[in-house]
Amino acid sequence: MIGRQRELNFEPGSAYLYSNSGYTLLAEIVKRVSGRSFAEFTKESIFEPLHMSSTQFYDDHEKIIRNRADSYQRENGVQKRVNLNDAAAGPSNLYSTAEDMAKWAMNFENPIVGDRDLIRKFNEPSVLNSGERVVYYSLPGDVGYHAKGQIQRIYRGLNVLSHGGHAGGFRSTFWRFPDQHFALVLLSNDEHFAQLAQAEAIVDLYLKDQLQPNENAQAPAAGPSKPPSATNLRLSDFEGTFSSEELDATYTAKVLNGRLWLSHLRHGEIQLAETGRNTFSGRIEFPVQFEFRRDPAGQVVELRMSNFGANNVKFTRSPRS
Image (cartoon, rainbow, N blue to C red):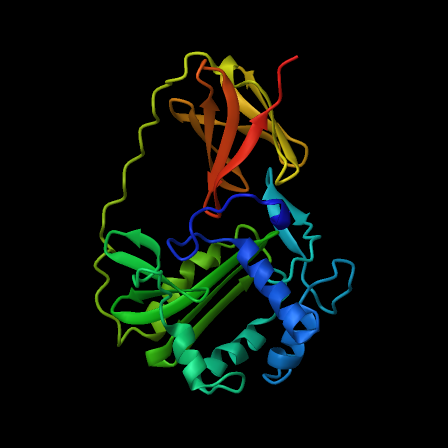
């Protein structure tokens, strides 16, 4: 799929956008340079030296792992198992335990794998070709910088590096406070893991004597946003079949009960909400922005999709019969 892509999101080094494809390619580079699979390389070079005996990259979805936890989500009040059947080692599929992740955290304090110079570079924010730090997110009073796959930010006056994961009902978050020699690991096999939101409360408990006052604690909650008024008078203009050769994927757009829907063989029915002229929003596992493009005659000929990992992925409309 990556090999079929013909466009980039932007010139390399000019901007930042999260992408699983980058981690997939990085794992492939490790495989080709080392002559071993990514799972074998990480086991021999990282996990075994750190005695992380319950940690592995899962690159065979039929492999049986002792004591492996299944993951779950609620549907209509009933817990159901979520099947994670892929084997994409690199961006995902790291199986571990809280105990092993604690050993990983301690390697940043007293390196066994790598050295202090490597750890120092690993903790530094990434930079663009312009020399500017890569901004991962920006909120009022809170800016997070990308740092080699981590998020570097200030939490109540303290420097913290963190990263989280979410796949197939599994949830995780990992925080490190290098100056306080403190780390936090939260792992779950519940899609609706309520304790994930308690990470700050746990930090507040253990580091309470070193934290600055939480200035955002009393910030008023934002009111509900007003939905945009409908701007597309004829939703039927957007009906049709749209296909991408790069992704080998096809979506069908149709109008049902006054709303525009997309259907996909695997993702099912996706309801779209109007955000402007020829633009919509929806959710395909994650939030997605949709833009329909027209030819000079005003006919819809193309659909572009964008999310946090890709911009303007092109789907061409099939000729109407």
